Length: 316
View (cartoon, rainbow, N blue to C red):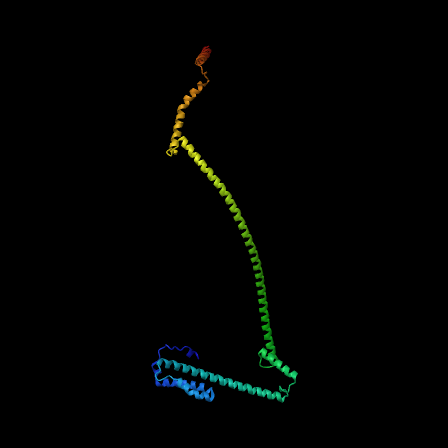
């Protein structure tokens, strides 16, 4: 069907005039022509069955307006297509008759010239068939040299294009092959590196696990040692009477009090240190004291003599 039939919409609202008896008669006539064409294709038997087909291809006693409109549009499209096909068929028949007449004239001219196909020797017939085959291959309609040259040139151009495309495809294939080979080599290297990394990781994990086990053993021994030290420190603090009430502030106050006591007792300690060279016996201590007193008196007398002599020298 043509574009008019392809865009038919059965759901479109039907106009009021298509339900008239004229439209129904037109559609029935078209259906009857279709049945007649179908029956005529089968000869007498077909014509005998055409009446049944024509009876079957009818709208019936009460056709709907939508069905009538749709079938009428189909009929118009079918009739237009039939007319177009008839015109094309007439043109093709006329062209075929012209070709047949031209072939008859050529055959007659060849027969008069003694070049009929049956009268040709086998080599000439083979050459003619070869020329015809080449003409058909080159898609030319005559045997003029210019046509063969043009067709050969066209064929050469096509061959050059095909060779160029083939070279291009060959280069692309070669590049793709090289790229694939490089990719395969790279993949092989990556697989080797992966295996190496796996071995290195396993070795490193083993070494790290061994190191961790050694460190755990050492930390376990350190833990026991620290627990023992803590218990010893607790026992020592219990022995010295440490209580949680003795905090940093209390210890600082005690240190300040100690410094104050040391500052107060230092003169007394210095005085007592001066008496450390006295003998432990009381009598000897008394003698030593008397000796010190004499030394002190002698020192005072010597000082007085020095002062007296100095005054005397000043008076002179």
